[in-house]
Length: 150
Image (tube, rainbow, N blue to C red):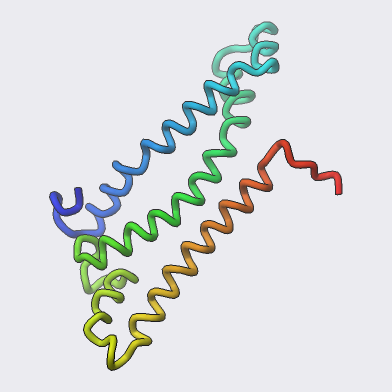
C-alpha cells in the first residue's frame, strides 16, 4: 500500500492503520461474543438494565484485557514494520530520522564503521523486546485466573 501511495510518513501511518485494525476488531468481537454469554450479563438483562449499561458496565470491562495486551504486542510489530519499510525506502524519508533509514544508510559503511549499523539494529531489537515484555507482563497481570493471594 505504501508503494502504491508513495513514500511518506503520512502514507506509512495510513498503511499500518488500514492493515492493522482487522486483528483488533476480530479479537474484540470474539471477546464480546464470549462475555455476553456469562451469567452476570444474563442477570443484568433480567434485572432490566439497558443495553448501553450492559455493554459499558459489564461486557467491555471484561472483554478489554486481551485487547490491551494485543495492542502492546502490536506496537512491536508496528516498530518493525516502520523500520523495514523505511529501510526499503518506502517509509520515512531522509531528512526525518528513522532506524530503518539509519540502517539503510549504514550498509555502505559496514566494513569501515560497523557501529553505524550495530547501534540502530540494537535499538530496534531492544524496543521490540521491551514491547514484548510489557505485553507479557500485562497478560499476566490482567489474567483473571491467576491467584494473587501471595
